[in-house]
Length: 620
Image 1 (cartoon, one colour):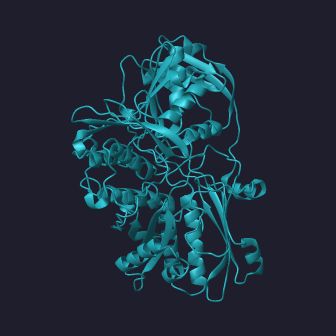
Image 2 (cartoon, rainbow, N blue to C red):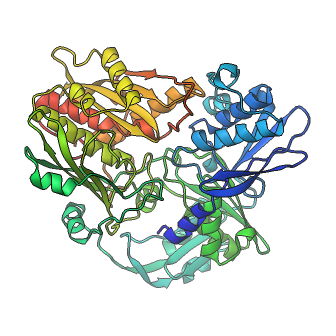
Image 3 (cartoon, helix red, strand yellow):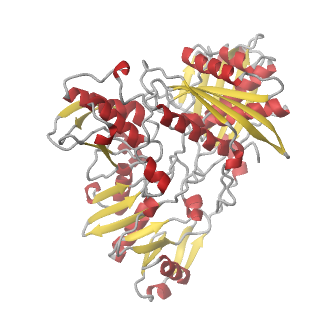
């Protein structure tokens, strides 16, 4: 399980540093409410930028090189970005929450400009930023030369395999490993519920594992169908806290009183299932001890958090742990914490040799954490003209990101109710914003239909944010909303300070339906690398198709054959439009595009069939 106290402590001491090679200077830079030193070093005509961030396909390496090149007045090729080596780079926070663009990029630019006795270049002066610089790893990625975490191999390394029970919460009660221990070159580790073997090859490790007789006390997995009722009974009401990035309670006016006195009430509920991250590359790690010092090679999004978790699990100081994070073959929020790294380290300590542990696809589905399921309840009151006067949104289990509505409701209460987690759950791209936007945008559409109003005009009547209105109107024009005779739907939001709108069209297909067109218009402020930004929009929309139409994890999920991901044939024509506002600081866009796919499609499904899809996935 994730150690929440350790995570909180890690986040408390997050800070940003930059390193080049040469003479050092310091700057007190405010970040997350703390004053932290930033160091900038230089050598000759080439520059080395060191960061704890990683590039997992979102283009962070290229964007940070662009930022440095812009302020230094050099080509991007003159910047070498060193990432995620805890012995070399600063702890500038994990790669999460789309923070690299709005936080790390400005910090890089400000420090370089300060060193040159100037201020960061303004948009009219940009020569590198604002340009579609190709991904610096692009050639390596498309030719297969790029080395991912799962590709790493070291000489003299043993293969490790962990023996696991049939149910998630089972307890190990007895072990007979005598036969396995007799095999030459085999190490068996049994420590409480941890049971694993290491051998010269994966084949020999599997052979040894088969010889071990282990008995587990079973712990049946709770039925997912009963969770909603259980959460309503056990949920803990939120307490207002505006000192956090994602407040669990967002209020305005008096929603309870307005609902009690209101007319034209509507109460609906929505369900979002658990889903798996399903990265193409399953997690892998190599651990090696040198006396009391440990070196771990893996592919995780937060190398310093992983270092802290490894140190705590093994009872050693963080300074004794060196983590090097290679580019992972997919993460999506699922590769933040130490798990395979701890397993490899425990085996390596007993074996006295480096050990590599590479999870199988079944292990990835079964033992990594999943996106939390969510039950959302929304209750509203409205005037005779359709204007919403009271709004109450309750989210059980999924989380608080995405709770604040982008609409101007005079009385509102948006709430995250904590519940016991039945399975290992954690971050997934955009966190709970997908759940909260699905519920909110579906309910808004239901309200519009109930008052026989156009869904676009109904939204515009409740929106005062001019940038959000602009993306909606631009999208409606490009999409030719609503389109005569077409089964279309839309959704909009403000996510991580970006403004987005998605328009979807559907058509019948067999016993179900298919998505025939998607269009997104987005305003993320200044577009620092327009082509890469559109790549992120495209990727998020395609991934969102899976959660909207097919994906649903259960404890029985074991293989990609049984877990329906989007296929090429599922992807409709996708149109992308950027509103580039150079005068506004850039917002992060790695997560936001995924959050509106499900509600836009669900609303189009209603236009097609007259049925409301309040539970995902829609194409069960």
